[in-house]
Length: 453
Image (cartoon, rainbow, N blue to C red; front, side, top):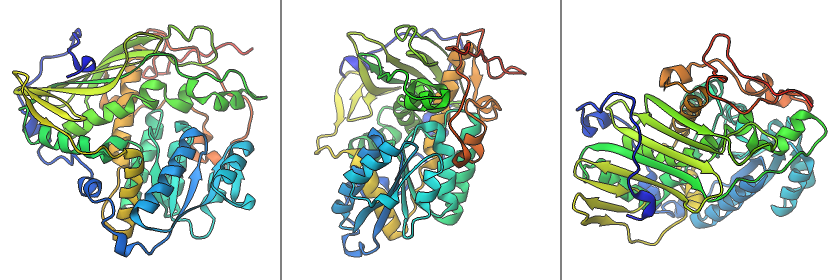
């Protein structure tokens, strides 16, 4: 393995792993989305049936939304279907106009404002929605798409707190009842290298899983756009990554990818965790988030996952995962080793980007009416990240049920009920969380607010 998969020591304040085996833990679990591997291997399986047009709306057309739009169009060509972007929606008019020009969408189908997503979903013929707004808006937008009967590609993460995650779980159940197809932006689940390697791990090639490691450790700080806008809310949305109610902090916004891989391998989510972190290099810049987290998660069978993420200037960086079992170890992206270091498996086929493949798989599922609904998987992984974040923020161990049922909402009330009715105005800015001074589980919650300028 490379440098990023070497062992890291970690203090262990929780109980020792129980003897329950990995196979017992995975028994009966749905460890991969039905049809994903087949779709990865046979991306054009429905060429002959590709008659139904894919009419997409993009909700949130910043960098990721625009990228996802391009991925959707490329996927349409791969499958051989008539794929078009027929409407775009964004809070900001300039963003909507720019995306309209980029994707050749008529001006009257370029919607802006808080209610833009609802107007876009009302465009006749829309059967495919791409959700790529800041994550704080995701639960309300996802719910609206499900209620409108649209198939959905949703970027990750899908919530920033317990109340938002509960909206997602409820909407997932409704999507299942309606037979809607949902793919999430956890693209590793759509890449053949991960599918082939993780299948072998789950089949026991490295024995019972003991520990996992997950990294999203950048070699520099994340972007910061400064103060832009007239009101507090506009300034926050313009600089959304730096506010918890909009991004969930970087452990949720980015590191969810690696946590999702670990949950995928384990066939479920952790049951508790503890962690630490800090805000070091962001200093006095506007915003609330931290720039590093270290979290230890425990799964139901006692296996541990050690999570590291950071947005700090440094010489060492890694975005990767690693797994250690009783009979070997693995980089789930492509390689499995025996205990002696012998290579047992290495993925050597041509790499196919998951960014396009996830749309290929979603289009194929729509055309063939086969099962594909990743909403629960991505919500589980999102809530895993939120649990780790709150353990670090509070300085206490946090259990799954506590974060799932937590009542504290980081965002404005309307973002959980009907975000289309929101208006620009004032909204609190929190002090960057400090363990012992920030705890959403207390009654009442202790969440210090920054002084107004």
